[in-house]
Length: 467
Ligand SMILES: *[C@@H]1O[C@H](CO)[C@@H](O)[C@H](O)[C@H]1NC(C)=O
Ligand SMILES: *[C@@H]1O[C@H](CO)[C@@H](O)[C@H](O)[C@H]1NC(C)=O
Ligand SMILES: *[C@@H]1O[C@H](CO)[C@@H](O)[C@H](O)[C@H]1NC(C)=O
Ligand SMILES: *[C@@H]1O[C@H](CO)[C@@H](O)[C@H](O)[C@H]1NC(C)=O
Image (cartoon, rainbow, N blue to C red):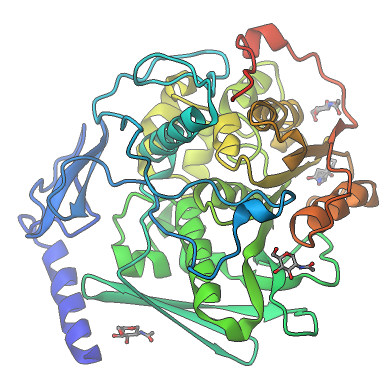
């Protein structure tokens, strides 16, 4: 069995070096400037992701793959039974939503795009059901223009738990991959207990009562500069030319960790009360995981800056006024966090993005998120890192749950250090959304900075009340 898989893998490897070999599943098969093969292997279809990237996807469909179709486990409690933990938003593609056509014209917008305004049909979201469709549209746009394709659950997934190590094995189309996470601080008692998935290692204090799952995200997708594109356990399964950037590949890993927890009662963890955190580059990862994986109950990006909590347009404005802030055009050369689909827009004009990171953050709504930022670090873009998530909060407000999202920015001198001034909000969010203590105060919108933010210039739209 293993031998056969090796032979198949070798054959694929050899084929990829022959100029006229058919493109494997998930490989690039077209796009402006593409000079390679455009025919997919048998059983796959060349799908236009955007003008700069087409990709072979399994099957014979001609539209983009739908968003993550995972379903909650059959034994999950009714999410409506606990008002403090709004269940995940519906995960099935809503049949009532109009999918974004492959050739949809994306308007160029120099303000922060209206998160409620549909591209398809030109109307604004007015109801919560509308928001589900608009959310699906943003999810699709974000994959096409920035993140690359977020693959659904692989056809086969197994998990084993031994000592404090949970090992996940995923396979599909004759390929397989495997990675492990370690689980510590599991409370006593039968549980199930909440847990926080920490990218690399947690750099926030995690209280007793909440287990810690250490996720070696670098192993799932490397982040070692341009040479590490397509390297890691994710790409062993989907191929090194898969369109997903590292942030998307890590989110896929988080999604699989939750699958494994669902399959493994022996972990004593509750898949309905999972948080995710990371700092700096891994903070960008935590934010994208919260956006893409709609089973995460609490998302805590820390000092994520540009590519995370900050907005590309606001960071560009800070750069233009003389701040040494990370921008889209810089980030695509620094590392492989984003998909190659992002390169063209990032290097020319971010106003062509049909969204900005306030909309990406809003994909988390109505689930809980606490954005932790640092006023003092120039590279993070202090104005952008505060006002972008603050604008995102309008979506939680529109959904009637503003206190499910908080923004806290405090100046301090150690990057990824955690100042005690942010302890009250961190504790309140963990207590409410992971430990079921509904009385804590999570109404948080604070910064130690003061900025001249031109609300009319950046936010020329109003926040509706979605009914
Ligand atoms: C994962 O599962 C597949 C299919 O059952 C198997 O072929 C492969 O050897 C397994 N890989 C690992 C690392 O366990
Ligand atoms: C917080 O800002 C301080 C001041 O620049 C910086 O020294 C430290 O590295 C930052 N941690 C940050 C800022 O991310
Ligand atoms: C929190 O609520 C969940 C589901 O409603 C339940 O399974 C769990 O035991 C509760 N945990 C605590 C700490 O109250
Ligand atoms: C924001 O960062 C810039 C550049 O480091 C700094 O000059 C400014 O004082 C900061 N603003 C606030 C309000 O802290």
